[in-house]
Length: 87
Image: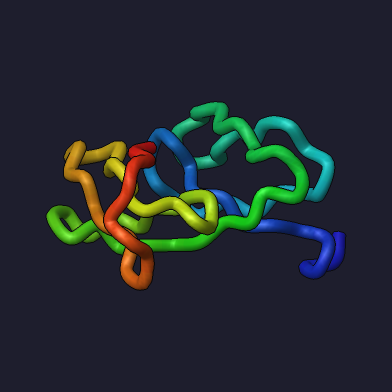
């Protein structure tokens, strides 16, 4: 499958970056066998490095803060107003 037909996703288990084919609803990680749900089509995603544990976090574009799944730190998204939504 061509790379342009794949999208990136961070494994919700081991935090490995996974590539999955468009149209998939879940991705099984080859490293930890965790099943990670794929965001709905059309959801624009962005990335952020956790300020505490340095884990790569993916979040919907427009979120003002992101809670790290590893260390539970709430990270403010740069360039957004401090606001009301926590993931």
